[in-house]
Length: 590
Image (tube, rainbow, N blue to C red; front, top):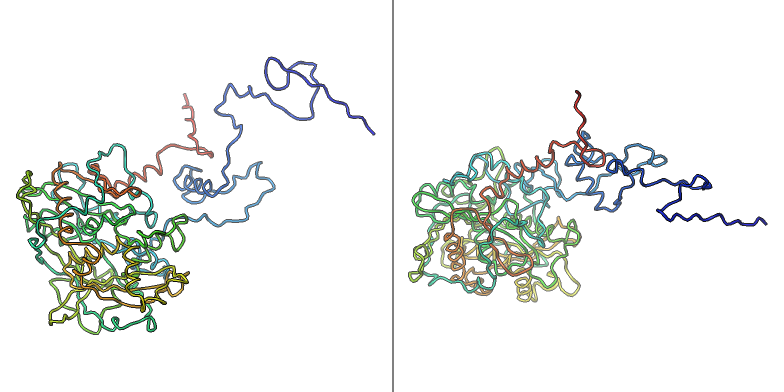
């Protein structure tokens, strides 16, 4: 047996590492002095932290897509290997690109953007629905903005470029606030319930014009039951519109012809304000005050593709949908898309198309012959005049305000007294039936209990629907109960029942009184009109029960500017090396 001889251990008192004595025995392991890099430390490649997790791969892909990876390689996935010494003996076995959050920009009835679906398939069109589809790009928003406010016709063509990542994340801030924005007011949600006007009966509503088409309601749907459920049809060939007030040509005409108008808005944004006390998720509205004629006008608007365009599902439930996986079919964003699609299809499914629709004052203002047919439904433009408070010390608050608002009426039905009743058609959807609770089992026997459960789980959504029906002057609300044919299939649905509610009685049932409806609108308008001309952002805090109003620059949320900023970020004119670092400038020849 060979004896093991312990080698001599060298002691280096003046530093660390092996000593540099000339008589030092050689080792079988290679070593190097770290001080060799001190002359040019920045160029040394000692090592690099590697992140092999999904987040690291995603980050690398994003850097390459923005031109911050390999220069000149195009905008796509970067090559997985540069083919060097470190890659010898390895081979790429998976060329599949990493999953992304972005959604198809198909030209479908439910897609963001213009046009119709062509070859995108059911899922690409159907699951990308929001409450409205597209705007008419021929109209600009030059409502006598003061200097500094962006003008021009090029803005609308890129409005839908604002949302590039699909549905919003409802449990995060709908808009990331900036430190330079000034906080103007913080409003506790519980204070909204105390806001009233003197007497709601003094509020007057006048019709300005009707646009679109109005079909009668098909009464066969009042007689469907769980045993005779009907499959929800898809109307992908139709276009649905939820154009912002600033891009509505009819509202623009009203503004130019009627100087008494103080506020312009749509029923969607006003309903969000009215039902704000019931909300949990974050959402936002944009207020713009500007000079017009001899006075000032307040525009209450939404950002395109914002949370206001979506319908939340089980937002106020004790166990709301889980948002850990945003691509799951039961995540808040996916459920909101599904609910929007169901409501669009259900509003067309219940119409009696055998009867010719009423001829209104004009066609759908957003329909274009080359873009296909618009969904049936009437846009009812109204003036709402809310009286002031004669005892208020502020002069503006003493005067009545005139609101020009675009509302929606889905269909009509004959009333008991022979008069025509206008209907608002909506649909609740069930996505995860339980063994001890499902609509198919309990809807017929415990209808009141199911409605009470929905009022608890979807208080904000039902509050918005009720407020919209009140503003539109709808006499009745037709609420359908729609469930998935298969809980794991969000594309196919069945209508189990339709309940009819008198709008005023249903509003009282859920605790929404007209004094408070008009009181919320009046007080918010008074607050913003007391400030200087400018743009203000009202945002719901996703964690606390507060509304916050910030003063923001005039050009905030401008789609054209955001697109320019992104282009600047993509190519800043700086050349990067393969590691993503800035390359040093080459010496200029003498």
